[in-house]
Length: 376
Image 1: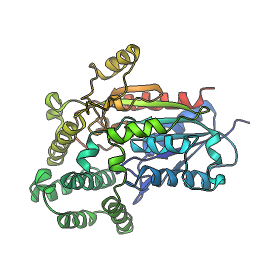
Image 2 (image 1 turned 90 degrees about the horizontal axis):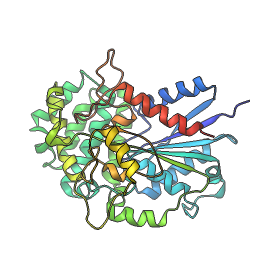
Image 3 (image 1 turned 45 degrees about the vertical axis):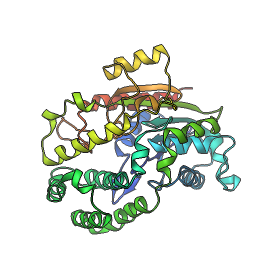
Image 4 (image 1 turned 180 degrees about the vertical axis):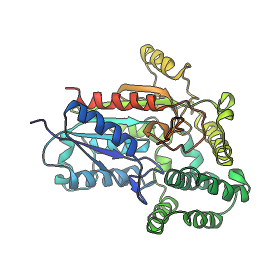
């Protein structure tokens, strides 16, 4: 009988597993499940309830504890980490890691076959330095709120969100005000969430506001030390998904902006992209081989440089291990949250980046992940 595989999804900053009834990884889960079924391989899934912006060590402890308590006693384990979630997994799998946990909660690491990282800042991201400022902290909170509400409500309810922000003067004015205003905006938006989910979202946003330990830890300077100290596990295969979204100066999003919400998020995307492109001269990203350079150029449609990113994470910072898939996408497109031009639409976008990411692109990404996991 074929062994059952268990896959754990690990969210990144301002991400989550399931919140207020919304399944953050639903599109990945559905696509992977269909392909495992086609291959005749049983599979189970679990979400890791990572604290959204807590330190990498705390997030790694939550990951280790979650898997330690929920993993079956036998069978292969696979980890899929989006954004910072990939760093949590690398830390847990490091042979010399000390998370101050009982040995029985760490024994599962020996059964991990693969770690797939998606849009992970392995060499850091300059956006971290911005998020550590006063105005950047407000943007981080706004991004967290935006992610939860936009994915939960979808269109046309996002028009409500647009009117609220427009009434406050838009994104630029909003991030210049104090946190009391955010409380008012949050409360206004939560009225459109079902009553049972409001408490979960309020708690999630409170954790973003109170504990932002991971922010400075994903700067290029901090990741230089992380990479020197965190070794890979010899029995684990490491693969990565890499993307870049359009540069704002040449962004093709103008004709795709269909609402005030789209205009607001396009402005926010432009701001984030500019910060993500500020390369640190002393702390370089990955220097890919000529073969990988050509693969990235063909997949993304241009030669990739240090200034390219998905709006949050530099593209060359995402490279770690085997390159499984590359393409044009923004930070959440690659886990299934993109502008869906097909009908009926089953995907919801979060930021207007202008990336031409489609269901076919997403299917190729999922196929690459499953092929890597099932490779003998």
